[in-house]
Length: 116
Length: 111
Image (cartoon, rainbow over all chains, first blue to last red; front, side):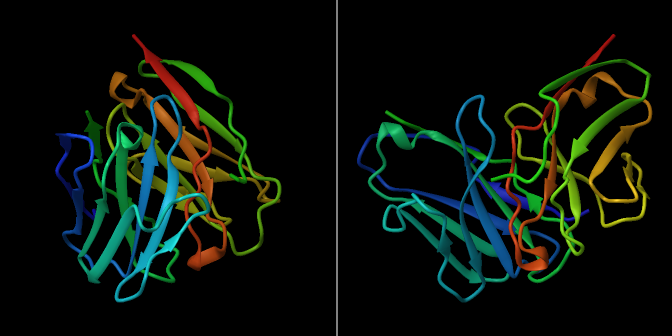
């Protein structure tokens, strides 16, 4: 089946630093990628959607200047959390699929971000 | 907001079939139903999806009612490793849309 790889799986860093998370589709071309965030004991919340070569579309309440998304190729999207603070600590999950398709989205294994 | 309603939790005995219901009474004619599950501290795993016909794969079966207002995911022989949160999702916006997750059903498979 389709595989989405996410890296790193766990990161701990100091407040004020920026953190980059990579998401790769390993065996298919992902024209559309998604970033979700999940707080403990809650469901996944969609943060943004990006189509290859286009600017990301952010959900209401998500700061686009804080969560920078780049989707420069059909197999790679990155999420950069800029000037991270403890309240940004969360489980970040990427997902990918072929655009305009009813084929399912496939998810990475997530990145647990802890800001001290 | 999610367009589906699921029971918050269910128990199932190991080796028995697990039947997980989902209501999606406002589903539109071209919207698919997707099922995912999430095991603790992992990303969601795709299980199955369908439009109006029943579907079966190596993991599960999906039964969709004729009026498409509800569906049931069936795990034919549940194992302890099937313990997870199961999400029934109707993709908002058709093929251009996104997966919006509700709270899902916490399935506990017990020995």
